[in-house]
Length: 154
Image 1: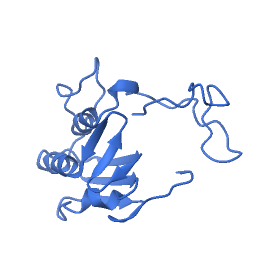
Image 2: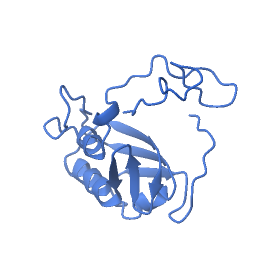
Image 3: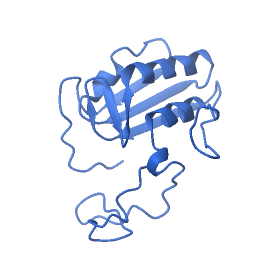
């Protein structure tokens, strides 16, 4: 998922390019984009994560089809606040994320899951994460702090 509003934005001095760091290369070519624009929502994210094609509000949805032997890695980067993570036109609430993860664990949708969230107050999204379901969450900020990212690389 990516909103895809940067490469061809009229304010972008290099149309068709996304430069992730000073003097960096164009990171836009070849990026798979299964969900863009108005399809990038908290609801579609949760539905895709748990593999629920019926809940995705998109024609021909692509979802994670995982099982008991799979390891899932999720990377989320955007703005956040206490108990919430921003999508372009919706909010992902901590409670909804945790309930989705618990449902996935009950339905044997993974053996392990790693979530990395880069946003202000990102640790607040995982304060109620159960300790017995093999999920590891890494955040860029504590519950009560801003993230102040300049640029991010993986």
